[in-house]
Image (cartoon, rainbow over all chains, first blue to last red; front, side, top):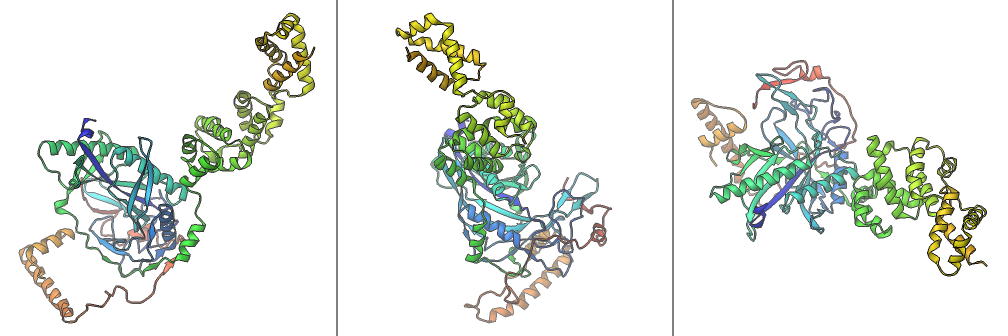
Length: 484
Length: 95
């Protein structure tokens, strides 16, 4: 890590997200993942002569959602552009994208840094475009095979400013972006399957330099962890080149996940000239203030908002709030629970403890978890009312309740015979019985040896088989002992 | 602007085409003729004229997000110069 003393790495990230629309961006064929090859196609997808694209209204809605969530300015008049390049999995010979009028500009993503602070990564733009098909080069000795199911699937591309300064910050940024798009339910954020993809523009410079170094674009990192690895590798590779007096080729490189290195794909000398020009086949899309207000009214609670509510309204720690908001279902479950119990800390502990352990053990998601927030609220209430100890609740009641969620928690606790006895008559009986066993010690207590209370408590718990409420039993012992 | 041999080569590369000497010259001449033809427009002053992109003034021609299957795989593959039962086949690009 010695290089970090002299150099800093400068990173800008481009994130492509496949939108969870039913149909493609500019045609009505299905956008579903995983179908048999070339079964989701249409004359528009195939780029047949004379066909005209028709824009999917859902794409605008999702783009505006993401823009609002990131605090972007939403562009009123959206035009489309053709980005021309020749490749077998791009049947039209151009990609329909946005050039001069990206639907979102500005805004940003707030990340937590390793030092415990916060940093705001500004966004350059978010624009709407379409995916290409898939080519397979290793199936046949002579031909490449092309599957056009993915061609035309709606994408948003989110471009950050080159403000990321470490692999860790890139990791945090991508984690936040993925969390956000999952909360918004506009993309499933699955980097392994490629529904979320990331390209990294990476350069290095000496600390204090104001000019950026020559940058390299790295592609094909199919996990957030691999983006982190690629940045670390590239930084070291580029510094080694500079230190030995060589120049950095402005090129595109690919990440090799097996050995954690990057290799050159094509150099920018033969850079593609994309010859952008306006797409005359698609009319402009006007996004009005009324439309934006309408989308705003359907926005779900965002991770930052829930995090704020959990810390400010419910008094949870930053740590608890972060774990709870990592996944939307967990956050919403807690939010519902917090609406029916006032013991927020206990609610957080139950979800982050027994509930998550159970989900992990069973390898299930929250949507298959048998208990409703009301079940947990019931348990928490019994503990708060001293009817049940936490250890009895988590070790005995909880495992039985997930098997029998139809039985109410108090009823099940009663049948398991684990309720703490707070019946005063019973307590009095146990207390008197305990004291009657140690008449000498009772006298010693009365003459001032108050430490003996522990002995009497132990006896009460023994007689009651652990069902006496310790607080009440303690009080009752003191009351009895203060009588003459 | 004139089209020279270098520009023809660059454009040919972008389109994955290649021209032999004679064809290259012919292509150069053709493209220059096209440019000259379009250059006629420069005779007009267009200083305060917005570029015309669209042939009408429509906007927001959008559709609801609905899946409509128009053609089958067999129909889609039918016109491809090379294909098998599942895929379009093209000359190997890399590898």
